[in-house]
Length: 136
Image 1: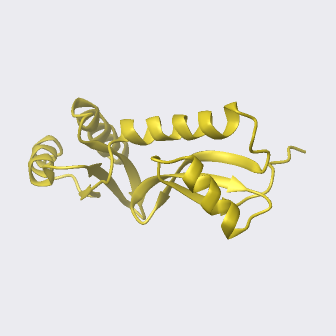
Image 2 (image 1 turned 180 degrees about the horizontal axis):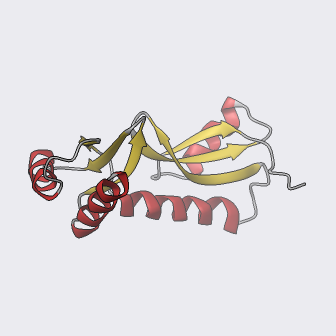
């Protein structure tokens, strides 16, 4: 049943891409993010999932498309220019129930983090300490 719930949430979200903010798991509950009309989406999903448990609707700050576009833009800004050798990772992650763009740098200091936030504007990013990934 879990895969059914996940599949239905994803299918429904893909049918409203202009409001769908993505899907994640919080403990044993699927959370579908929508940027607006939460009651409408909740009702539509309740009809689709008739009696299924283990899911909820929550407000998302941005659509999934916007998150993916921001991630691609930050990658272009920081990696394509080759001007930021201290940047080791860029990707989409979860913070406080929202998808965000995470940038891992080494060495880390708050001034450098602020510089990178400025360079990547208007895309909101979280700058964290993360050294280079080493494959053994």
